[in-house]
Image 1 (cartoon, rainbow, N blue to C red):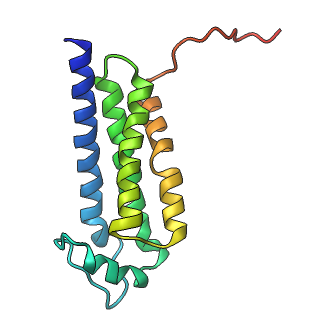
Image 2: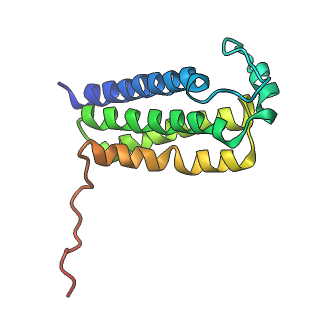
Length: 152
């Protein structure tokens, strides 16, 4: 297969499968870790207003599943991209991290702003580190360098 076409398919597959993982984990989050007593929100609310109203009542444990959704969606997206890509696998893995990072910025700052500690943890640890781990798990390795492994 043409390497350019294969790389395009790798990016599409990574975005789609990573997004499916993310949304699945978000959809089961309140089943795994229930909302605080008396708090509810409508997951079908496209504006996010009901979630914004509920966020002040969230406890730290209620942020575990959103973090895992962001981190594992990115990891799986990067993994799939590296497995499918023909060339520049590390760049594509980091591109996947960047794609989901932009999504994280949109969620954390505009759609459902949570506490600052969560935003910081989420943006620092759920995207680029997970993309790197996905790259490594997929068998990716950096290209050869001119640096000798032996220190003289």
